[in-house]
Length: 230
Image (cartoon, rainbow, N blue to C red):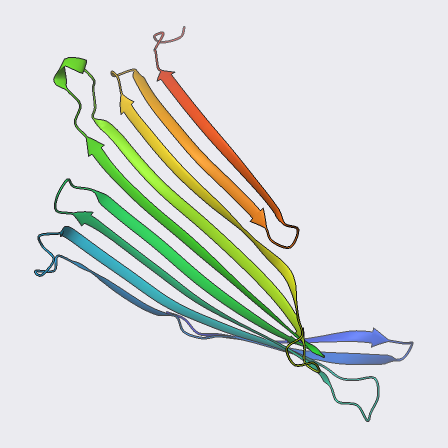
């Protein structure tokens, strides 16, 4: 989709009459994306529609700072980032259930003078929805819409010493998980009702901490019109 290259130059003042020039550059490589959607003949009995999307992204950054000593080498910092998002959506042939899912994995490596920092994050989102027909004796305006979703986010960051093999320290290791269930329907032209339950958990392995919240929400909404104002 796109390619980008950025070159920057900065000057830092050192002392009274000296300046240091810092060179920076950034390269964004072309995105690679694959998309497919259709109705495969072999899976027609299972899915009425199916769609897949995959992407790959990469970027690189570098900064070069000259040393104050003429005999010493320049300080070079490099940063590279990779990302791989995947998504899929489908509708089952039986019961007409809509399913969708998205997974994104990102990795980052920062080479600093004397150390290397590595980080990775992953995001997972799944969703399932279906419409249920209610008995006519209930006299409701619309069917019952049900939706179930699950979300998970994980993040890790480590730093290692280039001079010591195998020495690594964990900077961050945390995440979040959420499970949601939602039901809603229109009772009449002016009234609607929804019921939602969720369980959200956050954790931090660095501090051995975990928090779980259970939430139940019921909402009854009514609209009315008082006529034109004078």
